[in-house]
Amino acid sequence: MTNDPLIPNNLPAKRVAAGFDTPEALAVAVDIDPDWYALMESGRVLPTHPELDRLTAALGGIKGSDIYNLGSLNLIAGQRNNEDGYTPAKMYRMLADECHVLMSRDEITWFDRDPGTGHRADVAVNMSCGPARNPNLLQDTVAVLNALGVNFIAVSGSAACCGKPYTNVDQPEAAERVNKAHADRSAAWGATVHVNWCVACQMTSTVAAERRFRRDGVEHPLREVQLLTFVAERIRELGDRVPWRRPVNTRVLAVGHSDLFGPAHLEAHDATERLLRLVPGVEVVGRLDAHADDSPCTFQGREKDWTPPAWFATQDTPEGVRAHRERLADTVNSLGADTACLSHQYCHVLWLPYSSDRLSIRHPISIVAEALGCVHPDRRLAAIRLGDPSAFVEQTRDLWQSWGISEDRALELATSLSSPTFVDPGTQCRCDGGGGGGCRESLVSVDVLSATARATPATA
Image (cartoon, rainbow, N blue to C red; front, side):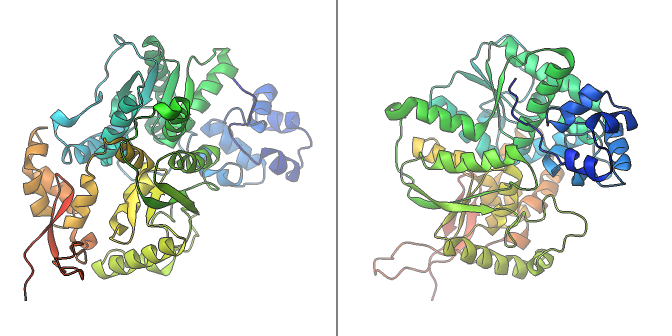
């Protein structure tokens, strides 16, 4: 374990402001072992839910967010406010269903159930849970790692759980059991590197490993690393041996959350830039904090008294969505980019409905996959552009039927995946029609399976 701070915090400043001159004085007042509290101040471990409550009370009734950034705070059991009825099982079922209406059983290229310990691999890849909402991103991940010659095993969904869903429902013992079992399984494969798709998984596993080391003296057997950092390192390691197939001629703005979520999110944001600068044809023109006013995920991590920008209240209407789609394209284009690359999978989902002919919304792993010749169609984006739940259900029938999903359930999912609110009716054919001026055929439909638009013959 290194001594670099894992968990930035304001404990020293808040302690002094509350009149506790030494860490020991506060530790005694809140009934925490002084040596363990010293690890909290140095950013090595987090308090438990009851310990945090005692700390905030002793420090003058402050909020947990006055001590920790949201990313760290959400790792403390019971601190995250989940909607009524949330359970890990319900969450995994919803994410699996969204995945299964967008890809068939035969298209799964990773383990979506516990593969057991009877495997050998140098690298264990935690595909996490949230990315399943965009299964093409998981397909691209597996394809990229194969193209780069990585010896790995990839697991997604509940079989890849880092334990954080149990932290969300204030079940820290269950979270620890799940996380430890996950690490033990990876070590049993012979893996020495644990790649995390999701930044929250990266934070959870890193902090849990540090806690076990400080509490039990058990050295973590794996290097925890986020996917974008790992892929960038692998490309640099291979150098001229990377099997690039084609340049991806695009000007990219790297988008990510940093200040409110802590160092792991900052690292993912930085890694987005580092990785994309290695891809032939890609020009990284700069970066954008996803808390900017025009960002579709600007609301993430805000305090309850945060005032949203005016456009935010109009996103339940097609007119409001279209207006902001143009506004967002104006913002990104003005910074010299034609593509926004999101480092976090949930931000990627939130930005997708604002994709347009002027602004592409992509994840860095898909840009790498395109350059390696192994990219997959973005069916979620195609569903959004289609904007027709009934048509979506019909086009994807073979996909969801392969999983045994009922038509009623498929239609229920389609109402959000392919909502008319987000349909993009302005897309037009880009061919020159033989006259050099554009044929102006309206693209009236979208093929979800191939993620391509289909044009009808031009009319008078």
